[in-house]
Length: 381
Image (tube, rainbow, N blue to C red; front, side, top):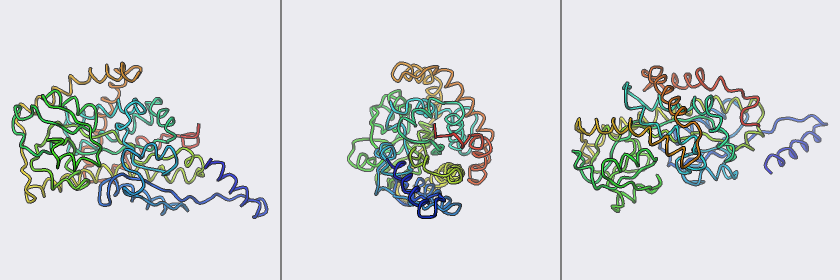
């Protein structure tokens, strides 16, 4: 309907101008289910500024007020927002192909170590979805969305209301899990996984619904968790959160744009993916430095705990393949896992010096991945 309405408006404008049609300017509504000041808002606010600076389009970011995190995918699908910060793990069946790759995020912190594993995983996810996974693009299409890339968190660590110092301390705890692989880790250490939407973590920790949250230190400010976190155990479970489609856009909105407008948004999205990854990393580093002054004890895990997590990642690859094959009907899951692992290794090497350089990371996104996408057809079939 939106596409038809814009065609009618364009035709009317052409008639008024003696039959010469001109491109219609666009006003884009961008939804992010995090508050102002968060890493996600920072990235999408910069996205809006880049769009406005390089086109005749207007863009406004709505932080929390338009759609929360769980409402965003259907909200973009239905045109409530034109663009938004989508978390595919909230919809495991609808985004099964994308979630298969996101479930492999713990590969980012095993093997070769880099300062910001999120830079490698975000680029690996983005290349995989754009260039190697037509099934991923199809499922975004079924949600009436066009995928525009992925940014990721820094390393996942434990934020708890009780101290976790040993393997024994890990048992019988309730862990908030934001993705299936982290939930399996919680069960592997003898705990219970609890699914809580990101916007509800504060209350869940404050009321004892969960003992620990598994997420990056960025969420201490993103979700105002400094007040409810008393202990942080670093390095475990490891991995990053890669179940992100940073700037998904409604397909009807995308189709209504001129080729020049689509290119502007595409280039701005490369920077936005880099911005969210960098901002998450920078805020996590600052928050960990600030934590002791806010009454939070920082605990280093034992070697046994780190080894357990690394061994878990290796053994979990088979579980991931079986789960996505049997539960979600993903074909050739093992081959897809191997491809993602290959890409993670590739981008560890390419991004190892980019932890604090979002401009270089954005250029990498463009040169290695997004410049290879044919915008004359992408998202229009």
